[in-house]
Image 1 (cartoon, rainbow, N blue to C red):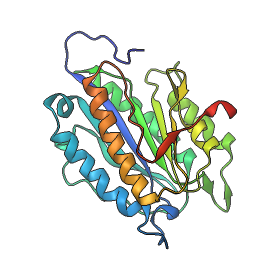
Image 2 (image 1 turned 180 degrees about the vertical axis):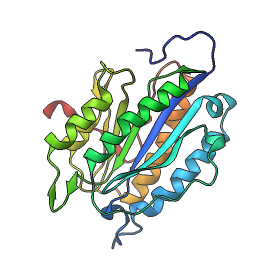
Image 3 (image 1 turned 135 degrees about the vertical axis):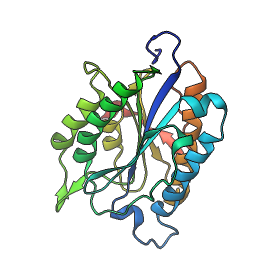
Image 4 (image 1 turned 90 degrees about the horizontal axis):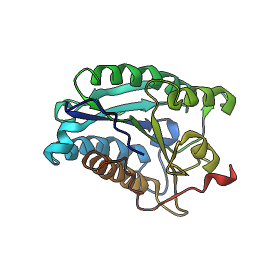
Length: 241
């Protein structure tokens, strides 16, 4: 499956969205080491530097956006080439884990970005890396799937002009079923990954960000979308869900 539409010989643009859970469980003090947020915040900035200093092909074609979500979603870095990612704000710290809000906001953001990119580029299919340690939770209860799934489905709907792939990477308390519901399918398998038992969350976060960097570089330089499975994680067999 070639993700790149044919638009002549204009420069390529491959849009990537790194969506980071920054709810309370991500930054709360832990007895087993640093909180996941403590690793995620600096690693995201490091990722942008590594992409910018990578090969000219990667630094030119990769376009990256950082989105944080908790009670609501916030665009921390609008879609841009890493070389232009200057003074990137630190990731915030939030309260709850509102899946509906982040998926609802992502769809129009990605659509507007893709329209802009296509004016001057050959655009590849957008990819969302969804990093979370928890299940959707709003108010004082779990956020039902029937509330957030329609928002997610709109984002990936192939009937829409700019559907996205979603790679779900989870650890902590997040359920495998939730990750399978979030992820899209690629070459017959859901792009859903979970930390192996016994893995330290802070270490897992570092490996996730490193794998995202490798995946972006490999996708940009190759003919197709590539996923590097993070160290300490496994791909979920979503057939049961």
